[in-house]
Amino acid sequence: MKPKTNSVGTIELTFEIIEIVKERGEAGVAEIAKVLDQPKSTVHSHLSTLEQNEYLVAENGSYQLGLRFLDLGEITRKRKKIYREGKDEVEKLAENTGELASILVEEHGRGVFLCRPKGENAVQLDSYDGYRIHLHTTAAGKPILAHKSKAEIQRIIDYHGLPRRTENTIVDTDELFEHLTEVREQGIAFDDEERLRGLRCVGAPIRNGEDEVVGTVSLAGPTSRLQGDVFHEEYPDLVQQAANVIELGITHG
Image (cartoon, rainbow, N blue to C red; front, top):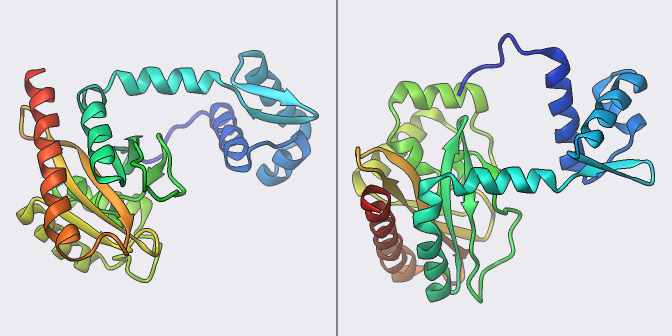
C-alpha cells in the first residue's frame, strides 16, 4: 500500500468518475460534474472516452459501468492461486454448514472477497465477490493483520483509519494490537457483531509454502445460529480444516 503521490491528474479524475458511477449505479454529466466540482465539458470528455473504450454504457443520458469490468475482474481473480485452489473447498464449506463462506485477500491495506459462496440458509449481506472491507472489522480480515509487522499494521491504520461499523468494532489502536496478538497465538479469529449488527464470523489464515499468510477462509452467519459450541468450537475447526486443504493445494498443487 502506497500513499497517493505523483499521480497524473487526468487519470485520477477518470478513476474518480468510475467510482461515482459505481457507487450510484448510474450518473449523468451534470451530476458527476457537481460532485467533482469540474466543468461539464471536462467530465463529458472523460465519460465519452470511457464509453468509446467500452468501460461505460450510456443510456437515457446516464452512464453505467460496462461489462468489460467483469471480464477484467474474472481474469484477475483466476490468476490468484488461492482462488483456484480454494474455490471448491469454500463452496463445500458453505454447502455443509448452510452458511456464508468466503476467501479474503488483502490488497492496498483493505480486504477483498475473492469468492463468497452461500449455503441454503445463508443470510443476505451487503457484500459480494470483489467487495472491499476494512480488515479490523471482521474475522475474515483480522488474521491477515495479525501476521503483519507492527509497522505494517500502523501504516494501514494511518492510511485507512479504524472506522467504527458497530458498537462492537475495535477502534482503539492499543486494543487492536492486543487483540491481534491473541488472534496470532490462537490461529483463529472471531467477529462478534463487529462489522454488522446481528452477524458473527469465524476466520482462519491461509499460508503459502513460505509460511506467509496470503488470505483467509471464513464462515459467517446470524448470532442466533453462531453461538455456543458452534461459534467457539465447531466452526473454528471447520475453517481451520478448510484452510489446511487450501494451503496444501497452494503449496503442492
